[in-house]
Image 1 (cartoon, rainbow, N blue to C red):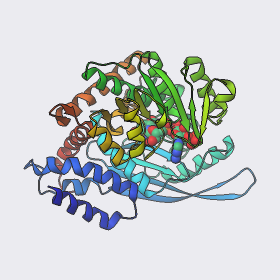
Image 2: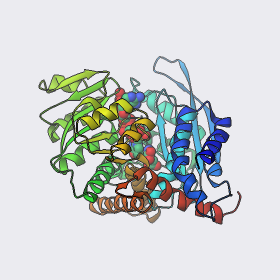
Image 3: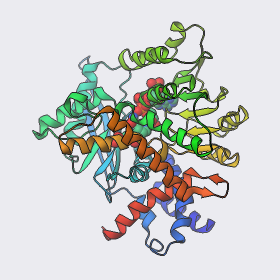
Image 4: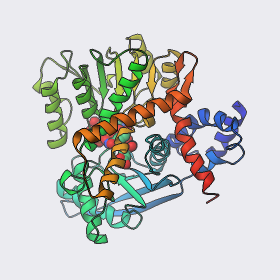
Length: 446
Ligand code: NDP
Ligand code: 2IT
């Protein structure tokens, strides 16, 4: 089996060796899915995984815009349309200076499995730009978004490809892009998700990824007769996913003692209560400030410059910032300090060696494609509401979200149970694979 996996990786590597994040995601999937394929006649010998890791289409385009000083700026825009076997392409847009094809292809590949796990009819895509919204005025962000959509609108549509937010893309950016799409197409449709409530958005979509990550952690804990109640939690990031993960932890009576951004980590031994979390939300979403400002407001807390939260003793760790933000050493320290559960809010935040440490120590570990699927799941519910021209209540959406996270947990158990340990990574990969593979086989070689 090792040889089959090695040959597969080296074949994919021939064309993609310059894309480290994409190759990392391919390896992680191949190691668990190839043994399953080999064991099943219906999948074996059909190059099904080979087809799945090759994007159906990659769009790359220039984005010109004029800054507040009247200077012309040039950025690069992308949309990776990865797989449309089970539905239209669906996945977020990321605006961050590090964005490149490797990162977007890894995210699009993860999205294939994640969207399949949600049980909703969504294919997978991912896009974005190397544009950095940090420090830009609203006018600059608007002009960039309009220019980005002026090109992207040709390739997307409510039945073709439905983008949403990701790092650097929140309600403001979705609004500007929606406005430009509507103007160009002369159509008011559900072409984007994460829209404002008064123009087609869904209740709970802003909260969904963070809430879902915590629901998944609670499902894992309940499965071993434990609960999140009373546990101490550290969270990386302080953006959309991190904020609502923290909110749900508080609602479930856990204590959150740390959050972060790319400049460092805050540690509040008394706990970040709802008033303090509200301060962080205002700081990040309205003032677009930095996390160290928390310490000025709450002097009992400490700011660790350029540090991640993984050195802080906790029961539960929720990595909610970005890829490869938690390495092998961090994993060892977490375990040494008593951490029993890691639920990924971000996409691929734990390095492969860190995941191995979690598995060797048999702690609860959920990969993002399972635990952060709540965001895209509620995007799917937003699409359904748009098609119905109707909207569901907060309680209705939240209960559907809870149900979906529970179903994903069950799918992981079905395919990931190994003697006395649940390998959630394996379970998520195989369960996600089956639905897409079956659809691809049914639809022929296209
Ligand atoms: P936001 O832009 O709202 O927040 C991102 C947070 O992560 C910020 O605190 C940011 O800090 C921090 N961060 C970003 N890049 C880095 C870096 N290189 N090093 C350290 N910190 C960093 O994004 P989201 O909260 O939406 O996304 C966070 C993660 O969750 C991403 O991995 C995303 O792919 C994933 N995700 C998001 C979903 C969604 O619905 N939004 C759904 C599923 C997954 P700073 O402000 O300093 O940059
Ligand atoms: O990574 C993700 O799942 C997202 N950024 C959300 C995608 C979506 O279409 O809601």
